[in-house]
Image (cartoon, rainbow, N blue to C red; front, side, top):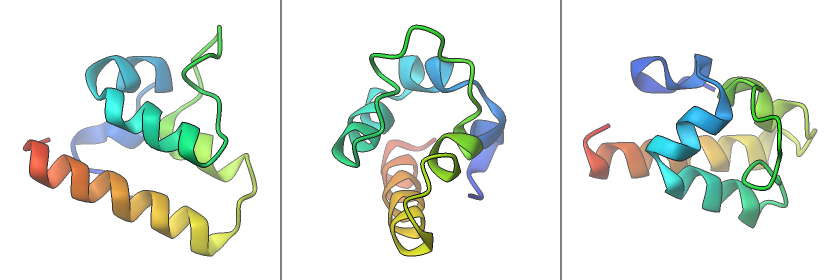
Length: 73
């Protein structure tokens, strides 16, 4: 995933704190980062380790980018 402002290289818990929508989006795809007690996985790794396939990974990236664009990252 290629996300702006270094978001892809941040721990997921920090990203969800700053951008709750991303947590909601991941939950939509059954990625339970919001309820994870550790939360140190990098955003770029979170999607890929769940092996959802290229098409779904691309859709998640597209939705995150659209959100960030509308939010002003």
